[in-house]
Image 1 (tube, rainbow, N blue to C red):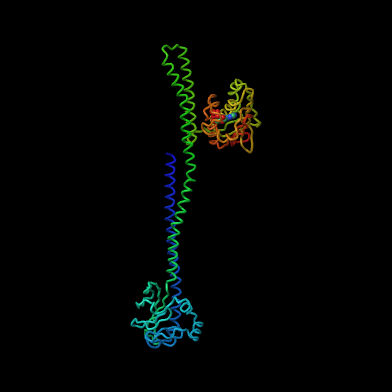
Image 2 (image 1 turned 135 degrees about the vertical axis):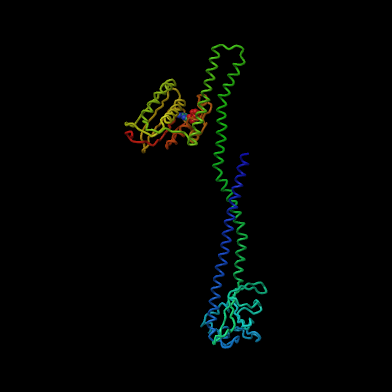
Length: 459
Ligand code: ADP
């Protein structure tokens, strides 16, 4: 069920990501395409304008009669084909090569064969053509300044027209300079093909990588979901044990025909014990949940760790002597050490650590509590000579309900929440907790808390 839900979410995330990326990439492709067309057209127009302008200024001062081809035109455009004259002069004569050198405007016309130059009379009839062969040219003769034309084969041309005047300022006709857009169209086709194949390929790659990324992003969610499931099952298990015990006790008593006062008292004591266990478990769970939601009210004040530790030591001295253990403290810091903290919570923290040390140390062992100052922090160490914790378990013992040896821990009344609560308290006080332990040799729990002042209490 969970795997199905996660896979579905993963697919959805990947699909959305791929869709958004496809839109972005498509938009970018479109922009690039438009920018390229624009840039190319602008460069062609500039080129055309320059060729037309130069030809216009070379030819116009020499025009005498409207529509009459003057020798200067043939001179500057050596392959000029005059309509009705058979177009015999297709070779470039040497003197026109000199003109070419002088004006420097014919190289595109003659070399690349991309240009045509047409002369149109005032009745809009073509009277002479140079450059591209005349049968390739569009037949429509219009004289708009800028036009895009298409020939019989579908090739496109960009054309610029300028009016020509005779020396006595009569309209001679028009000069039209056109350039083939074949190269542009070929490039655009190549770009279109690249986009047509490139876009789906990159969208596929984006899809694949987003599938992988979605998996990566969902890993912590998956982990916390599993932890939550584990926590629910552990909590239910822990709550079920005392409930089952109460139930069994009640059932047994109900089966009895007669119940003496002593039996009734013993039963109630047993039920009370299980009840206490239940309520302490529920309280611990509530406390942890408040820490999780950061709603645990903390009453921060300056507390003297030396005094606090002495109080806890006193509380546990009876328990330690019952367990035949030596409980001692060495408060290395000669001056009192203050922290800004919630007294009840710090009390709970130190108590949990000392209770564990007593619980997991065999008779005749030692438990020592140290208070010192190290690297500016107030450091509390609870050290024992007990059973120790295997290295592999060090990271897990702070997890909720985690026990190294669950049978032993449960039989001694442990719920597996003590260290989780200790860690939550330390973190709420911006401190840290770590364990150093060796199996069979003992453990040392080290708590670091930021101190308020080195010696004197503030305020
Ligand atoms: P519990 O209530 O079971 O003691 P804790 O959260 O306090 O739960 O501790 C988690 C586990 O860490 C314990 O079950 C025990 O296995 C291990 N542990 C904690 N403190 C000590 C210690 N001082 N020595 C050895 N093992 C310890």
